[in-house]
Image (tube, rainbow, N blue to C red; front, side, top):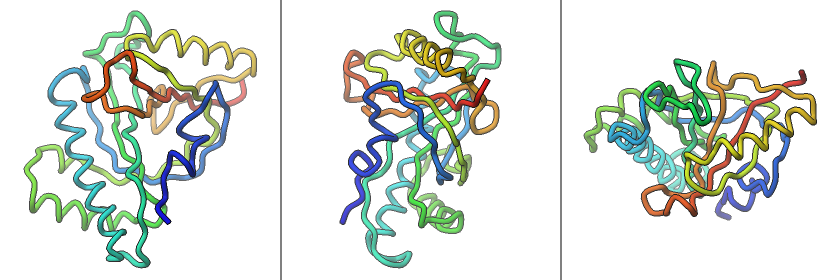
Length: 208
């Protein structure tokens, strides 16, 4: 049976309201970058992630890596911070620092990733392929909700999460190093008008 994250892991990816949950250790293909995501470089970086993710998906589906396994490729994610401390309405997009990623099934390994990367590099030209990394990370307790609308309107949704943090006596702690929050992109920005875009906004949290 095909593993579909929208059905099997609905609580992780499709929260209907601000939700607290605890996440286990997960695998990711990642790529770190800086600057305004509206610039062409960001699209090139995303374009380096997907060929490897689809190559691994097909290898699992064919049974090249053991028992055949079919799944839907996970949505694009990113963890974000700024080098100048700007946030919200004062956000300086040129100071953004991020790591974009695609989650990978638990049955895959770093060695599988390296083999896939070599296959993709033999067929495709993308300068960012050499920057891809395999990372395993346990985020632990998180608070998240869905934001619908343009990215520039996210501060209002983050304000809702901040109220929950205050009510639950929780604080935000950095994720995947020193990044401030995570976003999961449920819609393709290239094909979805900004007003209909859906993005999971997530904080990693701990007791105050």
